[in-house]
Image (cartoon, rainbow, N blue to C red; front, top):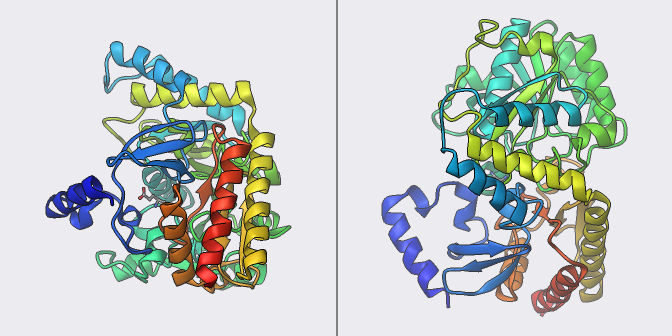
Length: 428
Ligand code: HOZ
């Protein structure tokens, strides 16, 4: 059926490890072979065999405007004609920095990098350098990119492929990462109590998206802020996924929390490779060349990436799609819930705005342990049933489904109908 995708995958596997440049897209967690995508427009993508799909991956979050958004393409074209990279300061990077700082009150200064991984890596280095402490606290099932210190009990592909600890990370380094269950305040109190004076930072996805979507319990982020402040440790909010997604000002705006440092990526690059980290000026000024903590990058602040990011943020400001995205998200979640119930399928849906995850369990999902109760085989059956009906969902349980401003109520209703058939098929 996917003749050309299969051919390309066979060729890719001879040249690229696993045939992919990022593990989750290989479909390993759900079985089968990945689709090779030829093009996208709005809420839809087409594979190399010409089949059309409603897309709920959105390049894993960046494409909040949908595929090939006109304003992004125009901005890219204009920037491209002026040159693709200078390795020198440009006006565009100042403009994007200005926009980020205006959007998030806790961001006084910000630096551009090339990916979310680079952003969290740099934020961790800054936290360690500024506090002169080495330990980092992270939550089980949260994923902050493939940074050595942060791949311990991580979500996303590490969880989906059941790789508990990655070879290649020195044990001595992994031991500096302390784990707590997400949404558990007593565990947080305990870890800070037991490691007084040695924790540099707590890093959290304010809304977890990489164990599937898990919202923070009421008061959890406030407590995290209080506990870190008391311990003179930094609070790093990883808003790579939630920044400009759950609200223009990110989860910090939704939950009213000020981070010391924030990491960004995905949407701020408008579909091009971008990350950023920022926060209190007294911390950011410790980065070279102002301070002594080193971090650099040939393509950091790349003009094409800055142009795509700026165009995306401008469009988001102009359209303000957030309440519509929330209604679309609710429509999809309610529809899936009702369709599952009527087919007798046990399903929990976690949703924050336009990001959601269906979990095949009857238990409430509040952390990685409860997310792991979801029946992975049922997710795979659901994934393939939906794919066969023209819906491209994340090919792994521990990921978020994303809606874009290009999705319509008709798109969502069609997906719900497809889910209704898929659930019935699964119960047969
Ligand atoms: N790990 C990212 C998703 N949470 C990216 C996956 C990919 O691009 O394959």
